[in-house]
Image (cartoon, rainbow, N blue to C red):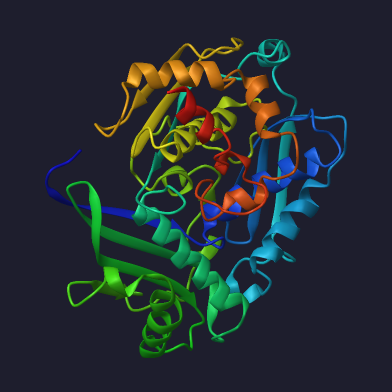
Length: 380
């Protein structure tokens, strides 16, 4: 473990952020197909900009889905329902360019192999109840609270876009205090900065960040440029898969580089990352380690992972070699085994596409279960 003080920062964005709009569109399409065709193959990306949404990718399915209708519904549900925002569900153009999955890829997947090569990482730490790093946990809670304040109309000037950022000081590897908080709230042009800063401090930050972690040493930045009236796709082009660190552990640990949204679970970018989180979380929950990172690597068309790596960061009660042996004995890490154990052939994906795929204590996140912790502890 680290024996010095250091700062760690993580960010989160609301569901109205342009990249997150795209993630939700892509996963909305996955869910629509999985409602009637759980064997469908989906790999689709979206792009949004002022007045336009585009969907492209490879989809092989026995069902029909109204992709333009899904796009418009997702945009409406997020809150882009007024032309004054520069982007709204009724007037935006929708362009689609869809083809079937390559037969060369399908040949490997149809036999139970991985849908692509690559390495995927999972991580868990005992520093929060949900076994997530504290900075990303607080950042997600801030953006969820910001969205809640908007949806519940606790103020009348918020719009869908928004960001948060949290900096935590660690001492000897443990979170000690929050040294900086950033909240950027998308607002109507008539809103006054002093009101925004007062309201966001009272209604968002004070409701989320524990007072035990803050003090005079905590720097708070609310709309630090002074204005955030132009936001969403009007201000910034969005693309599926550009918030992979927001989606995972906030910069803690490693990342294989592949995004999750818009992909069915035969794509190990998604399913193996979920399984890696499940394995890492159960290892930490078992008490075998205080922190755990796992890497799984796959070859396209091959079922078993080509490698498994465990890093306990010096916190393990048993050797990392012993933990790897336990993982191999107690977890089916083939793509088909992952899909079956986590029950991934169902429409659970759109809600993963904002506020992180991990650390979620709600229905539809089976990789957050710790049902194997007691087995690992007993067999260690």
